[in-house]
Image (cartoon, rainbow, N blue to C red):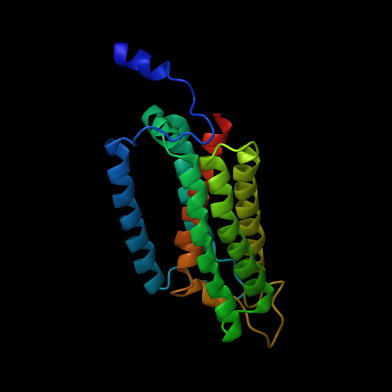
Length: 221
């Protein structure tokens, strides 16, 4: 009873403050779940699970991208211990992790070798690069508890999520037989096949989860 009261009486973590060490009861399983998640989607990708026929929306791919973040948000709201674990994470580190978005430069390479159409590859690649470059700058502002730290962190969240919404919409619309695809031109069908399929079915939801955790921190300032 005393321990529960102590936990509940702790003040919310402040912006730029390094949270307490994450509980091993969640930190270790998180890495194990991530490994199993990656292995599973890779296996499904090799089986062609996400490669929908031309003219059809890639339902399996959309589900793979959207379900994990939704499950995390529900669990965050429903499980107090998970809630505390999320809020124990450092906002600067969560923001800095978005720097890995620079891997989206691969879309520009894919456009250069005629694998993906420019209508998709350009916004996808440029958007990811911009977020990836801006993330460390915002993370530094958060770590230093600068006066614009909150705005910087929110900026990365908003820019990152907006980029995903726009690019995923274009990616679906530019599939063969869909509204944005022009006959005789490249389509985004390659996004349903390995290795590019790992972007929408693993990397996108992983980065969205980091955004959700950052949002939770920002809302509890």
